[in-house]
Picture 1: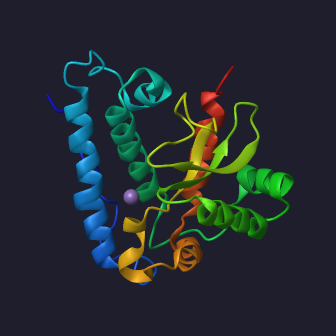
Picture 2 (picture 1 turned 90 degrees about the vertical axis):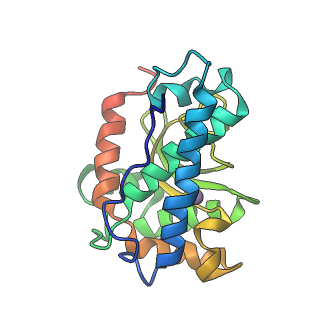
Length: 209
Ligand code: MN
């Protein structure tokens, strides 16, 4: 049984040019993300956890093997990443999220700077995040490998609403060693309306309540 499948991208591989190039998108989705899905399905065999949904797998990650944790994270993180990118991106947050960002970070520009710093400071492979903490406040952080704030054994805890992949496979073909340039380009294809929807969902989940 293979419970998980690769989600189709909601846009073409070339749609995010020139900010994220076609070849990177193709390999990243059809090879890397597919690999996480395949390895997650393999890692689930005979665990007794085959029936659990992905969110539950992540929330109980400390009880599973490193292989299952890495691939469940890989599947969740990439699904989130594709969903917040768009060739027709809404370039600024609005509504409740805009208010929360201003209250927490002072401005959208300051938030962007904080996320870029978190992404640059992540040594080796990992992700930078904007997430809702259990107390309902917003925070920026980073995790290694395919960890994310939903995992019970991650160094930061909460519900992710914005994810930036800082693995070299996410940018190396176009940006080589220039992670900062990729992090800057990311904002041109980040769709804030998708982040707003995740913020509303995160508040509904009411983590910790
Ligand atoms: Mn990736």
